[in-house]
Image (cartoon, rainbow over all chains, first blue to last red; front, side):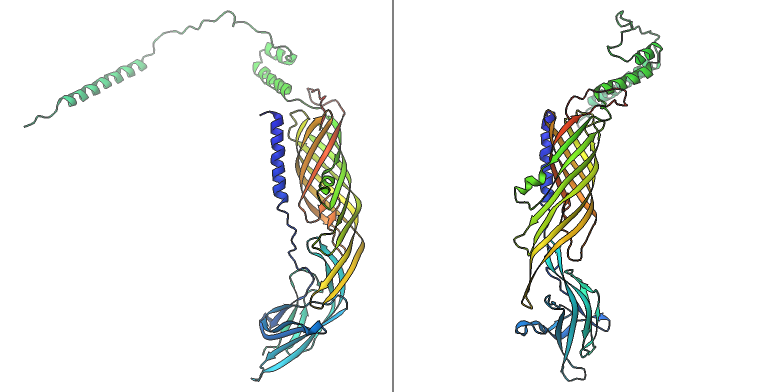
Length: 165
Length: 296
């Protein structure tokens, strides 16, 4: 084969390799499409599944529920971008002294919504810079904020410690 | 009563005896060295000193004459290698180029581009320090996304070095590996952002404007350059790249970096046309090659 044929073959081979490599490019978003605080449930410093939990946002259209009488160990709590405070009602059925009772708590986030362009794959969203996290203490023992800046990463942002009934 | 077949046994014994005799004779023969002298006649035409080939280095001739034939043979080999593999001057040529890969890809729907002019010094037809100066811009509104990204036309610079694996050949054809260090300081806007919160049934829209960032990155590539006509050539390079450092903002991370491409990409591609300006300097090597061909 002549030198030119070698060069042409090399060009062709390299282009094939290039096309193969570029076809492997992935434009998927591997994180959430929006920034949602993920709350994990704990009892006595251990992750726990809480039965009979109902959660809803205060002022949600149509009193829409996030979860209704379910057994869960974590939940995403969507924050409002148009205001600086979002509150949630957490209802829990429990039997502390043999009699089934309904415990109602309120969980409140105070934050600054930060407009943020994450990437071409995930798009633009709001991040939330949490200034304060508070709760009532009926079924909930305490809350702990793990990270003040809530982004679209799928990592826990807070822990809710429930009373051990 | 049948008698035993004795004949074949006797024949076998005879054969064995014959082999033993032959072996004895052969061993006896090898033990004796005949006092025969070998005569190798010398033909008159080979018994003379031939003149050295035309163009043979005087140093080699002197070595032959002085009787140091081993050194002469070694030197002659080196001399023949020098004749086969040309030694190019320190600076063979200066090549200027224009990278047109991204503008070409934009014609096929790509939403960003980086284009640059380059200057490459060809040293010994082997090492090629190079500098690339360019502009990059972007304008992207993905159909399934909630934003418009506008990368303002911003400059970038890359410096680096190519190594030509075909340095023993003429500069018309080059197989290159290259390293680059790139830097850009750039601005961008993210506009027409619309967010819908399905739980709260809220729609919010905003623009992020006047963002600025910078990036420092490295590239390693392989490529080819081929002469098209006279001093004009064409070449391309596939570049694997990675960012060493880039500036994040409170409201955004840059998507497009001029000269680099999308921030999360790992491959780049350049396709350019090059024009060689012959610059000949005296080589430090012992033998000079005439390099009248254009460097692609």
